[in-house]
Amino acid sequence: MDSNSSRGKRTSLQPLRAAGRQRVEELLEAASDLMAERGYEATTMAEIAARAGAKIGSLYRFFPNKEAVADALVQRHIAVLEDEYASLAKRAATLSPDALADILIELLVTLHPRVKSLSALMEARTDKIEIRERARGHAIAGIAAALRICAPGLDEALARDIAAVVLNTMKVLRGMIAKDAPTTPGAPGELRRMNRLYLAGRLVPFRNI
Amino acid sequence: MDSNSSRGKRTSLQPLRAAGRQRVEELLEAASDLMAERGYEATTMAEIAARAGAKIGSLYRFFPNKEAVADALVQRHIAVLEDEYASLAKRAATLSPDALADILIELLVTLHPRVKSLSALMEARTDKIEIRERARGHAIAGIAAALRICAPGLDEALARDIAAVVLNTMKVLRGMIAKDAPTTPGAPGELRRMNRLYLAGRLVPFRNI
DNA sequence: GCATTATTTGAGGATGGACTCAAATTCGTC
DNA sequence: GACGAATTTGAGTCCATCCTCAAATAATGC
Image (cartoon, rainbow over all chains, first blue to last red; front, side, top):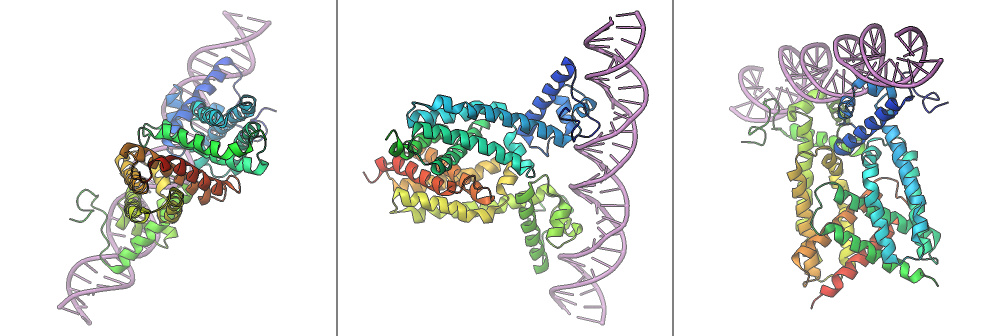
């Protein structure tokens, strides 16, 4: 009844000992690093094993194929997103739009190292759209909820539209920070300013009556 | 002295007849379509030839290898960008920040079908950074120039930072429009609004003294 | 029409990377 | 320390995809 027995290939087992669990961690970490760097297709199974200090056979003991590695990574990353966005609303109460704007920006900056390879995986695996949608849905719902706590008069649908925009802004900032190519030196700061200008201009009319 | 003789492999020639030039166009168009859909790595040379209605041998007559196809596409796309951004300043004079914001947004929407595979290629070929930088540099310079025409008091460096932010906003919108997943229905419109709020708030202090 | 040159064709070579497996090793437990 | 079970190992198989090339065909110029 483990995640493998239901539909996985016969050749691949859950780790049952501490060493195995540790190895799975190392393998996934290596895979995430490499896929974030080079992309899904360009990352080879041999490289993943090598970076994890393992041999190719160990990798295939725990993952039936390359796709399973990707799936495991996506699943973990989405769990992280769900956690973070679910807890967002708690922190959003009693904040000014400017402060909320900064918190949202910082959230994704903080999140980035924990979901390094997610964007590479999303692009590569264009099948499995339902998973992508689930991730986006949780993010947008979480942000929209925070927005409506900050600006109670905000319409539900509009809150989701604004959330979608803010989410993309956050992704852009993540992209700027991730690579050492911040386009221009002041761009990240400028992006934060844009986000504040936008949220302030958009939320103020709806604040507390 | 053609682009091939200088450093290319011996096996690959410039087209010398109308039929050959036509074939090259079809091959590049097919390659651009496929790489935009599936990504660089996932696109095979056989697929490119097939979609162009050609055989694999014809593809290799004009391109020594897959990398050369990518290079040719990038080169063409960058030429398009350079043209468009160079002509941007002409249209920017005498515009309000709001109008400029909309023109910038529309520019990238218009541009998108002409540089379909550029983002896929940029991600796949992380070597050749200088080319990526050249593309970005032209875009930022063009936008910054337009901004300073609209708001003459604007500092050079700040104009470039703002341009970098606007460029990324444009890319986000392109992403929203490209796939049939506009995140939420109102998101594209909301993104336009954000861009106007941002540019208005940022440029007004610098307008005509 | 004939010679020359450009283009097309597609079978096949070479390579790299996904994946297998049986034997060796380590770990946990009694 | 002995037994079974989990894990490690890495050489080897398979196959998809990149790329070659020599022969066939089409176009051009004279």
